[in-house]
Length: 191
Image (cartoon, rainbow, N blue to C red; front, side, top):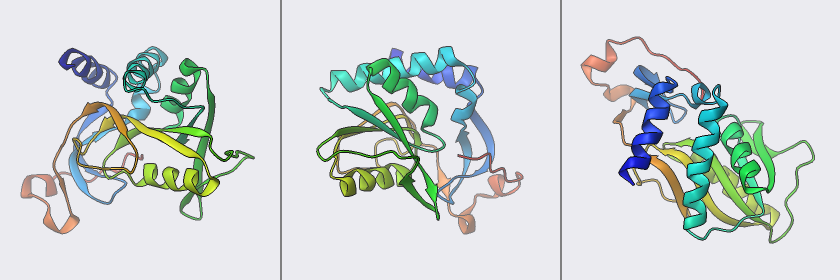
């Protein structure tokens, strides 16, 4: 397991997807570290390998699915590659009026087994929105799969979850920043 996590961390480091500085996360929290998975997604060999590793963990857990649902933007590339390698249908949810919805004619059938695939989870907000989309459509969520669990396993879902890498970097409310972090200019690289 350590070898796999080292490989994943090496991919993120090599592609400059693991950043240091002062960042505002989508959750509104501040951190000295940021996973910019879009950097990994420039390198299709890295995406292919990450999806291969994630899919191996999904299969080892006995998770069966007919469709992959990914939240835009972060989960789009890895979700599509997981679906491609698994030979299943791929759809995505996107924002409309600040909430994730299925658009572009995407539909789920009652009972359809759906795997939610995300890039990085800190609090799990977008994954939870996807779970609700599946529930409302009458689908059956198989699991939530992610490249990086930034909560190091503390974020919980109502279904099984699988991650390639679990890391927990400290996060802070804007009013409780450590002095050293507060001195660094804020970046919001996008999620």
